[in-house]
Image 1 (spheres, helix red, strand yellow):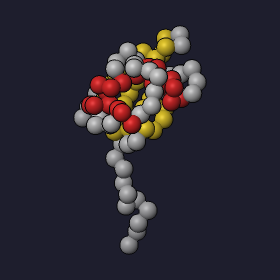
Image 2: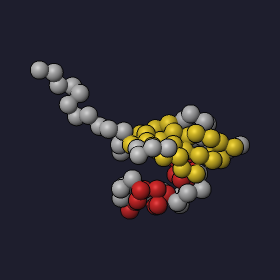
Image 3: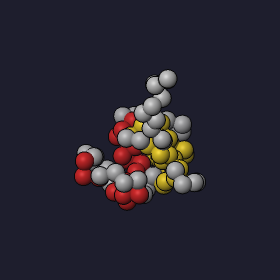
Image 4: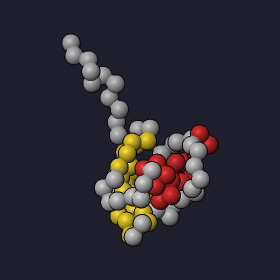
Amino acid sequence: IDDNEYKVLGTASVEEVFEQFNINYNDEESDSSMVGGWVTEKLGQIPREGDSFMFEDISITVAKTEYRRIIEVIFKRVAVDNDSDKED
């Protein structure tokens, strides 16, 4: 979609998507090799459109489902502002 936001198919390889976002795949325990399965594991429920969660500095939102399967997911890198609590 843009430099920080990507539309990913549920059938995409988790390993390849993690590489795109510079996430160490070996650190993530998962029984799924596809994004849809991994997202379902993380949510802990059957996914619905609009379900979302944060993983490291990435916002992950279920964009499209069909029956009980994830068709598309939006991965968006979120800038982490460590100075937001500081005021001078």
